[in-house]
Image (tube, rainbow, N blue to C red; front, side, top):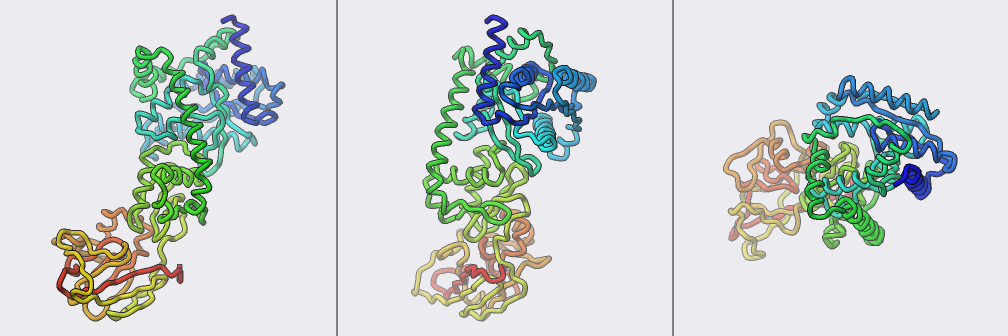
Length: 487
C-alpha cells in the first residue's frame, strides 16, 4: 500500500463512520494515549474536521502507573494537540487508590478512572461524544474475552460504532470510527505521515488478561484460521444484528413486564415467568439498559442472577455492576441504584394481635387465618425439611396446637432468634436473613409471625421447626396479601 493510499483509506473510513453516527457538526473529545491507534485517530479527525464540521478536544489521562514514562506520555500528547491547534484536556489519576476502593484489578481500575475522566471532560466541554481508537483487532480481542467470561449473545456483539454508557451518573456517547480498520492500517497511516507514536510497554505484560489474548491466544487461533480477527468481527456484527432484531421485536411482548418505577425499573414477576426463556433474558437486559443507559460490564452471569432473584422469595437480592441491585418484592423485581428503589414491602409500624382463626390488618398487609381439620385437605409431612406451602410463599400451614389461640404480627426486633424448619437449634434472625440473601433495607419490612412467645414464621421465607404441620393433626393456614395501605 502506498503512503498516500494508507492516508486516504483511513481518513475516508473515519469520515464515513463519523457521518454515519450522526456526529457531523458536533464537538468531539478524542481520547489519546499517545499510542499508534489513538494518534492516528486524532490526526485523521483533525485533517477531516472541516469536511465534517467538527470541533475537537484532545484528552489524555496520566494513570500514574509507569512513573516517568507516564509523565512523558502526557507531555507528548499535549505537544501533539498544540501542534494541531486542538484544545488539550489533561488529567491525572491515582489508579492504586481507585483499585483499593473498588476492589478491582489494575486493568479494571485504570479503565474506570479513564472513563470517569473522559466523561467529565466531555461534560465540561459540551461534547456530543468521546472518540476512541479501537480497531478491528480490539473488537476481536473483546469478543474472545466475552466468550472466555461465559457471555451470551449480547456479549458476542462486542463494541459498537456508537454506544451510550452511564458513568458516575452521567450519560456519555462513545464513538469508535476505526472498528472496521486493522492495527496494520493505523501503523501504515502513522508511517505515511511520519508520526512517532509512544510505546506503552505495559501492553506487552502478559499478566494482564487482554494482553494474553492479544499476544498468546490470537496467534494460536491464527494457526487454525489466519483470518480469525476478521471472523470474530463478523461474528460480532451478526450477533449485534440478531440481538437488535430480538430486542426490537420483543418490546411489544415486554410492555407489561418491564416498566419504570421511582428510582429504577420494575420487572413483573408473573409476567416474566410467563415468557419463553430467551425473552426472559431480553427482558432483564432491557430493564438494565433503561437503568444504566447501556450494558457495558453486564455479563450473562448478571442476567442469570436477576432471574434467580425473580424466581425466589420476596426480599431476595443481588448486586449488579455500576452500583445497582435487583430486589424481589411481592410481585415485582426492582432494579435500581443500591438503596434508591421504591420500598417493595409495606411496613408494619406496630404489633397486631390476630385471633386464630380470624382475620386482621397489619400495616399494608391483610392477614387471614383458618383452621383445616384432619381429612378436610391432605397435606404432606414436613419432616423432610420442605414446608407445607399452599399456594405461594405468603401462605403457610402450621400445627394448630403449637400455634395456640392467637398470633402476633410484627416487625423484627434486636435479639430475635428463630429455629428454621429442618434445623435442630435456633439461630439469630439476623444471621438467617444474611443466609437467605434478604436485602438489608427490606429486612425491617418482612412480617414476623409470633406465637406462644416464639417466632413461628418469617413470612415469605420459612416457618419454624417447632410449629410445622403434620398429617392427621389440626392445622392452621395463615395467608398474607399486600393491600397497598401504608405502603
